Length: 483
Image 1 (cartoon, helix red, strand yellow):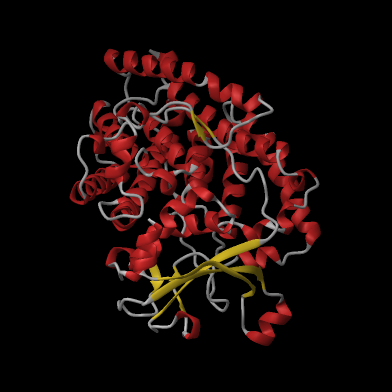
Image 2 (spheres, one colour; image 1 turned 120 degrees about the vertical axis):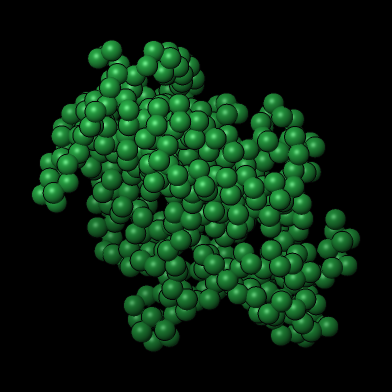
């Protein structure tokens, strides 16, 4: 069935399957390390309480049947193992149903996590990973050529991802239209990386060039992905380079890395061969044959359903009231994407402190250190992406004044007063080495990157100004009264 086979995209399929699986491994490792403290039985937003008030039909999840910390650990462990098998390419060596089953297992398990994850899993890249994983299930195995409809749906996904991000910027903050957005963004982004300060200190005319290049990449280049052959391959190259620029300038979990993987769906075997031939690497299918009839029927049926579901994201793209990072179905099969429709001009950080002293009015306060978010003004921000530090991201939203974050912040302060082990392991530094503090509080600071002169004089990377208390001194008794 020649019309069904995209035989020029066998290498693209391999990159998609292994790359998407690798991101699932990262996502499930984060579940192993963070889920219990954030959402477990004694978490900040416990899943058992969530599933009691939200019905299964609104948030399908395995954990509606039963939740325990042991079960979520088992789910994450299975996800890591299945993901690593796909990264190694083992299921892809069998008939098409084997990688199909493997990816559907990843998708179903991670859907169960995301749908009960509340604010800690309310990010666009969760939906992106779910949509990509579901699509990858129908790419086939090494025994058959890639299905053309699924490859085309990956192009459609990248177009929605990039165009959605470009349009939300153009329609949103005027700083994107007057090309000044990067005067602020590198400094105020959720989690700066080790090079973010250097990017921020680049000359302002170069910042304007960056923004203009971003508009070209997100508003024009995505349409070229729909022109099969060298044009689409070149467009994919532009997307990859742009995403790598974002990788080295900040920490956006796996958003940029997964976008890079997805962009390779538009690169032909001929282009891969042209790039890799000097290295002695050959590409292309070896012995791939026609797909079995059952696989053709399944792929065409799934493709038709996804095209039908895509009508709402398409309407969203052309709407003046465009939604950013919206899922139009509870299974996260076809979604709307976007990022930074508005740019924060100033960076406000919440700094959490504790003390062992009895009198909070005459106490020596010490700061808790977070892994990714700014705290110590001398500390060089680290590169964590594609790993997602969920507590640190939630702290950024808290600094923006998001009322939705207050639901977990009071329990977080309570866990610090209890010196709760799983909670403390989410942090980089516990000033009390596991001892229970007598009081905790939260202060607000205005942060900005240090100028070169301040860096040389004071050895700091950040300069901060105290904005006062956000939460006054609290002990276990006062937090219990607060509910």
